[in-house]
Image 1 (spheres, rainbow over the protein chains, first blue to last red):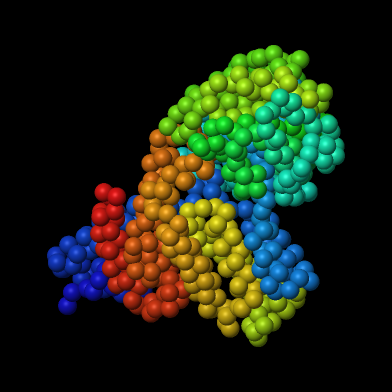
Image 2 (image 1 turned 45 degrees about the vertical axis):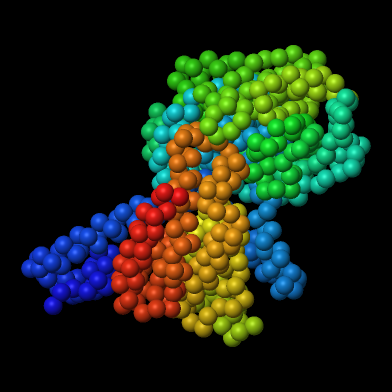
Length: 397
Length: 183
């Protein structure tokens, strides 16, 4: 008697009991008909498996870490709210999501895609972000090597896991708040918000609550991951072990002129301009985020490691590192192949104008960044003509 | 509140070693439940919300015995995810879905490859929508790494029928997949 489809399919998945599996193997040796059926089933199963494979979440689509979610879930379970209220609250316990380090600067997509996947972005944040911003330096990087790393999903998962295990949110960002006037925004933000004085229309003003989080560095795990990902020549200093790094992102304000993305949409998407938003210009203002780290940490050394991680040679990393004061410079990495930048004179200081060139993915975008009197300003929009950004920047009041 | 959920709640405060607490169950299944839901809905935020809802329902209405727990959990998750997949169908056809994805997500380092992947995802989900619910759910559970026994418990069918059902679902998937290729 021939094997049933049930037996053959289970045989392929090793889901038969050991005696059944043996009997099936014996039968298959003797029966060419069943062998042919087995081959056909196996071929189809592997084709279907390959076709379903793209649905699997990629590392940058991984959920929040289980521990963080569990903590929140437990807190909610213990709250005195009624069952129904809790169900409503449930939907929002993960929102607003933790903003990426740079998101406080406003709705500028450039920051979001600067690195190919979240954990590397986080790493870069750790290494390049120990600062209070006084100036901005733009750093074009070659993303090829990071891209290669992006192909290794086990490693990505480990980076991602290490990152989420190391991080504790100490102040959760509240929801974005739309306010009626610049004065109100200034009061909430704690600094004098400036607006485009010659705007033909009133902006929509959004105040985004700040956030704070801390990392406790696990040097051993981080080094093991570096080794495994082919960066064994980079050695993390021993002083990093257990070092606590605190990041504090203050309240930021964004002023949207024209038809702009909805500020209440999900955080990660906030940065995305859509094609139909071609007349949207966003001005974002925030006082400097602060990052505190133990004094024995050598920022320049860490920065060099971070730079080499992005694909720079040791010499290049050293050379760049020496030009930067790592305690006060916000380094904005941009992918070399899709964005360019130039220094421009703006608002009485030197600023950086970054242009993202057009590609299959979307329209060209620009971002103008500068720092004045301790406040970081950014103007972003769609299109290749950034003159408007300069015009706005030079007429802020 | 059921007897079982009472049991679960008391278990989390005083933990007998053989008792599976909510925490253990959560930690054991969180990633896989998310994996099932993500495959069905294709959106991180939505998959996370549905994952939470699944575990919340576990907390509210736990099944009677621990051995039915896995099946129960994946049954709830699969239903929630499958309904969301179907609801997405009502919102837009799959070409539009692919377009929406491109517009809403940040640019990756390799745009051409990325667009391809998004189109592919939209196409696969369209095929799943066109399949019979049980067969679509079966494929997703199997490809999320569940064993036959767990799948059987989740779908409420005999473990001895999974092989047959799976072979049939794969055949159906392949047929619809080829058909969907041309749009």
